[in-house]
Amino acid sequence: MTVQTQLLAKAQQLCEQRGVRMTPQRLKVLALIINHHSSISAYELLDLLKASEPQAKPPTVYRALDFLLAQGFVHKVESTNSYIACCVLGHADHCSQLLICDKCGFVEETHDDELAKFLRIKSEQYGFMIKHHVVESHGVCHKCQQTTNE
Image 1 (cartoon, rainbow, N blue to C red):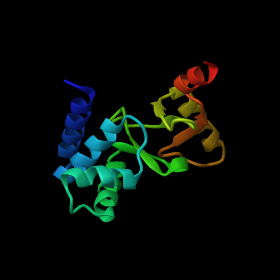
Image 2: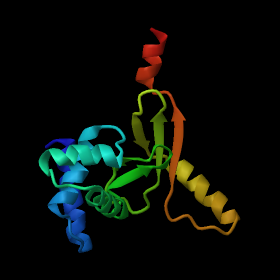
Image 3: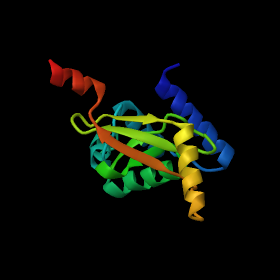
Image 4: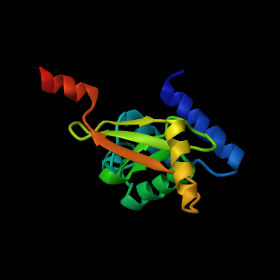
């Protein structure tokens, strides 16, 4: 079973458990994001979706993205206005760190429980309760560093 198949099956299972509907269109958008292997914009998604659904319009993609974000199946990369698939579906206290390559656009999702704990402790000192966070860090990925050094 491929990673994509596993993530899609897990998303469908979570939707059933939560009593929400994973429509074929939502599933297709999620599959496109997973297959992209890096961040993808809504309009890039629309172009890909139109290959199988020529009638698709921007609201179609944005409604699917809203659903997928609400369910925690994708993350929005705010700094680039793009989306990536979540690699840990259904995690109760899901906080992510995104490593974003400024050269090639690759985005890697990481999880550091110590960083999440530190942010939670710091926020509590100010009387603030974090419900969700995504930390974005920009730099240059290993592959681009190798290319630059050659």
